[in-house]
Length: 88
Image (cartoon, rainbow, N blue to C red; front, side, top):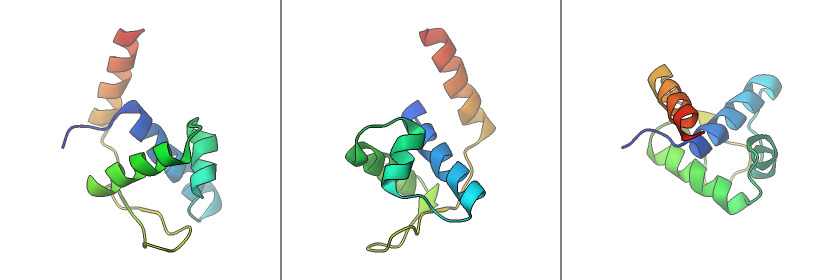
């Protein structure tokens, strides 16, 4: 799989930040607020991609069961940072 997009990384970071601060997973609405997305369906799509890529998991049909199971590499973070700098 290709590396993460900036939007996927924002969703991942919103999830990780919430878990670290509150010790439980955020709701989709909370991820929307923190990541800057207005659409819950967009956030859900990014979460599905993160799940398929092996970064997160959750229990189907249960709320607040999102778990981070793999960290984003520094290489991916740097690649996105450089890509963003060159785009601006």
